[in-house]
Amino acid sequence: MEIVNPDNLRLIPGQSIQAIYSPEPGEPDEVGFFVRTVSEIDQGGLGLEIQQRAGLVKFNDILLVLTMFRVEGGSVELFDVWWNYFANGSEELFSQMSRQKRLTLHFYSDLGKHFSVGAENGFRKFFLSLPEVLRDSEPWTEVEFDRAVRGFCAQSYPKEKLWEMIQLRLDLPSDEEEKERGLKDYEGYIPEELRQFYDYIPGQGHCIRVIPSAFEEKALEADPKDFLFPAPVRTVLRCGLRWVKGYPVAPIPFIPGHGLAVPPDDTEF
Image (cartoon, rainbow, N blue to C red):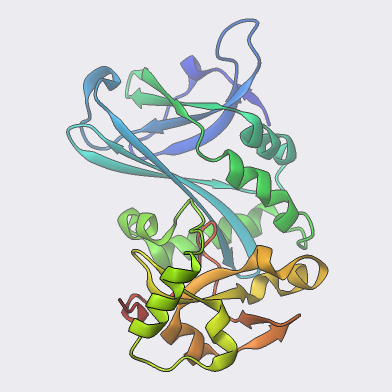
């Protein structure tokens, strides 16, 4: 990917991009994020609260990598940045994101770069896991990627909705005591063969851990436990299952990084 000079960039309101740049002469190049707000935020970046989320979206057989920032400082603004794994230079870009410990957000106005804010790179683990998922995909063109992004955004915008859809962290299984308590509290029916995959997750409720169908081939080649993700019991029972090495596979879209796209009404607490 071409190295950019932050001082020469010009962005339109609401625009957000990622690029390689040189922080200072003689320092190693790094990936930076360049954004221009629509609303007014804290001048100079003082008191800004910045949150990060990431996800992997499958749309029309194309895997879209998404990173998002939620910036709060007087007002709230969301930025979505999409990554094309098969674009020129992207392999090094993804590798850099998995190694880089810090991120810099460069904020722009109509006069150019306004100020910059540093933050811990919360995307490292996410980007470290991506090549294993993406490298065996059938390559797509830049045009196909752009169409997929536009198509998915048309279904998933506004950005507030997109932000709620994705989660960065993988929820860890609860311990056996919590699992048994949740099973006893669940008022519906869970088939015996699925009870070992049950989990109660705060914020997500009663769930069954399943392998999303997008990862079925990977699960056949590796340890299926590495591809289990929680989905509401109602969703799992309704969608129908296949079994791989004794683990349930469900045709549920894999949309967030480490999460599934499920109907909100299926959640049970």
